[in-house]
Image (cartoon, rainbow, N blue to C red):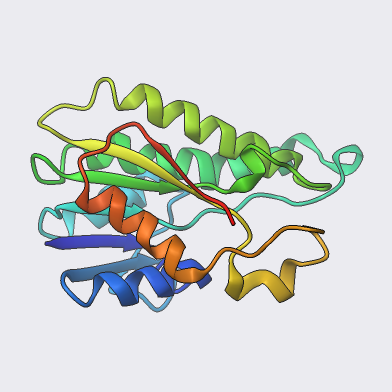
Length: 200
């Protein structure tokens, strides 16, 4: 299976890439250090990415930015960082990519626990995550040619626990293998429109 991973160099992306590469042909995409260069905040860049490669069986996005700051300090432009990158970036991967991936192919998007259990300074990120959940459930009803879409929504992962522990007091870190398996479930299973929550 040919699997496109956007964000394969990140904390979660590295583990997912490692696991999928054992049995599949993985093509990586990102702003730096990937097989294909792409900026998901730019729809034209996304289209160029798909046109530069053979049709993949699956598209996995583990990328996207959002501004973390206290709500009282967030400006309208700060909110648009997450809207343009993590939200519309992933929406456009599906909107554009549906015309390029193989029949029966799948999209796996990424969010996080903030959609259900936000912490201080995450108003923008939590908003974006919740919007991706709603988008995916609705898009699943209309994708054609047997295509599927799911979202992996993980808690604080082990490999980031030390860095982000102060932001997530009392949260039990999720094992990286458990997170990787959620992506494998989305790609290899038959589920569609599912929010695959991976919490400790």
